[in-house]
Length: 68
Image (tube, rainbow, N blue to C red):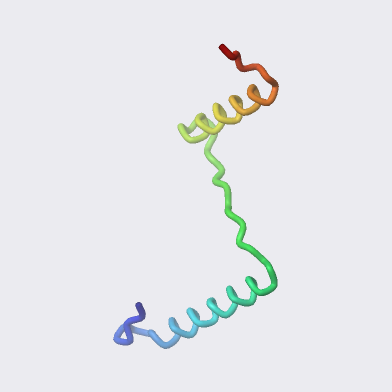
């Protein structure tokens, strides 16, 4: 919630209103925000988990997984 006692609250409120207007205009045009996928550093735990996930998905698509 906006605190009118904070310094420069007027400019903050102006920017907030402009951002809301811009968001409404973009939604009216059908533009949707795209999520940004993180880029993990090679060798990190997150990167390793992503590589294992991709490898498992590729094996599943190739039919390399054993059933039974």
